[in-house]
Image 1: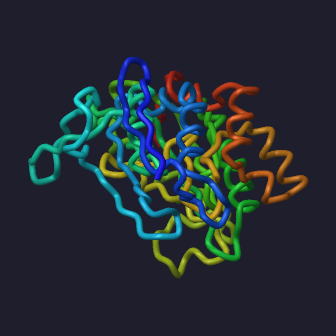
Image 2: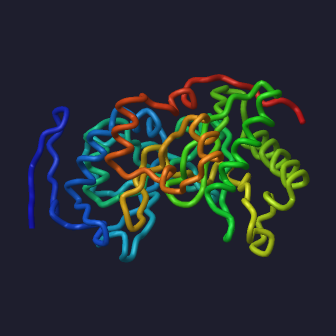
Length: 301
């Protein structure tokens, strides 16, 4: 069992089980996972900044049992930043904030392969920074259908003066974000807007799209999950690994890539392994950077 003490930005961190293969069907060790997040840190940390992290931990690998952890573990190092968030019953919950490289490495040392965060920051939990449309295909629909829906959605939003940005889910769907970054935005507004848009799209493209949660409505269609716009919900963070057979990444895309994909569909082109995600980020920069800073106001529907 490999163990190592490292110093990261002045913080001492004890790393263990570095040789453990957490993606056994592919061959991707804990050491490689740590290296991925280290190399991707400058891109992912701004998207984790001040957000209550939900750990999704796979201590024995992606083919074994996992568990979610919303509370910041009591055995955390003293230097890990935390925040208090209020539960529905009024109780306070201590959450982890991943605001620096040392904390990101500590999180990965716990085999928290997937990083899930809310749409609001911990200091303003009722104020979403963005609105999201979670595009989830129901078999036999697939990523090509999600791409068509994403492009329709983009074109629907443009006349409303709303720019949107898209990323892969790292699984089978796509996520379309509308940055807002306004202190007067509420989840009530974002959920109402997302639901209305999803319903309009479902009405106009009934063979392609559904806005209904019911399972019987989803086969062969893309479900637009508007309910993710809720203070209690989380989304997979951009650049996070996913716990699949291979170390795939939730990766941002340029709209031109989707336009090209529709003309020449190849599902493999919208699946990005860790090395490819790093290469894209280093060459293209953060294609999701505008989601953090662009200010937009939702129109009244």
